[in-house]
Image 1 (cartoon, rainbow, N blue to C red):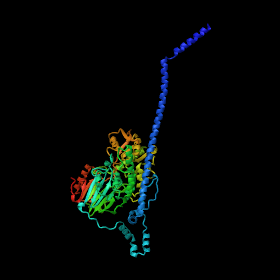
Image 2 (image 1 turned 180 degrees about the vertical axis):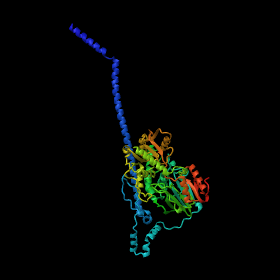
Image 3 (image 1 turned 90 degrees about the vertical axis):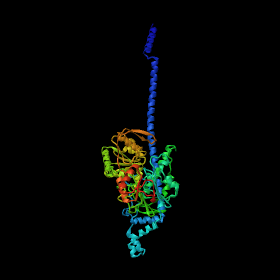
Length: 636
């Protein structure tokens, strides 16, 4: 009986347990749910790890890209320094160059200033110096007089040695020669590029048997080598070239010269000393950018028209021509005079027999912090033809540069005083240095960083004389260079201040990295101070801001695009380094040429400026070709 009861109890317990259990299907679902939860948990952990790894990979790629870019920059500076050293070695063995240096030391205003032995200042990057040009040595006139007396010269010669010795040296450097005879029908001027457009500037001057190029620049936005070159550059190859003159170091005037020298390798290239110092870094950087674009498209994109070796060769062809001195090239004499615009910029006088052609290059009449305005010499007055740039030909009603600078400074002060950051995308050569000095002078308490190629160019600027004829100092306690590979750290460290970064149109470079970070920040500002192509990222950003903002697409280091919200203030300021229409009219009147041909501008603005010139009695001629026997008094 007891056993039966126990069995019944156990049976009832089992039945109760079975009754309390979920059905088999439900138990199966529960097991599957637990298994699925584990799988999902493992998946989420894996996704988190993958996201972290992807973020780390992006950061590493960015660091690698910055490191590679800085390595290229170091190579560029080393190559430039090597080329400069080679040129110095050649010059050291040339008695004509030695005589020119000694003569200039007697007469140059540089002799009033000591050599630039400052070394590297606060905020200035350590560098491989591509172009430091020591200021001319001070001439000890008492020592020269004593030497003349010791040599047994007469009292009269000894007393006047400081006058006749440099005259003798200059005569040795440029011996008196009879002017070459160039008949009118043998003189011809042809605009090969940059006539009715901005970019690809190039002018061919033919005088007798002499063929001379003034500038050979590249065109922005090119997709093929033929689009990059001056449109009619093949005309330059129809015969030999006796010389190339570079007005200044901007790529739209000088960027195609290494390619020309591939086909005409023995051609001498003339430029001012400052331009010769700036060209190495500009040319090497162009070669690097062109090669990178070709690699990014697996060789299907823009083929690099020249490389590092071609730049090295081009640098060996450079010949420094100081302002005011003449150089004989075949049947013509070349003379350069200060054009303003940027450091080293020159206008060109071509003396062809009794004829003279003046080619302005890019000019500015107003003084800037880094360079004075154009200085027209008497030798340019009454020229037969003036080729005059017309970038701002339609700008006679524009706001003055002084007011635009004041507006920029005021807006920077407002943003930074509230704890915000300002990005100024700027062209590496000229604009970046001008803006840095402007801010440092007007807002000395604001921190300013210089990033990208502008950092290296600024170092070269500091080796040149400013408008006061003293060495420029741009870097300082509050103006500092972002160190190589330091963009990401600078982004994290800069709490309030200004960063000036390349590229000026937001097409590439550290400016894009800064823009991706600052545009979504409502306390920040992006201030455009230079020309923007309508189709460039900078141009599209300005158009977007004008229509109320939204999201904006920016390139990444991987060549892709990301969209960022535009919450920051976006504005543009007219800080151009070109003469306005009013100033161009004044420059034309100062030179007083028989005819003016407008170049480096847009047709509509040129037509407006030509009408203004003609209303003042200044004859103009159609952009394109010119010769004395085909002179006209109309552009039609």
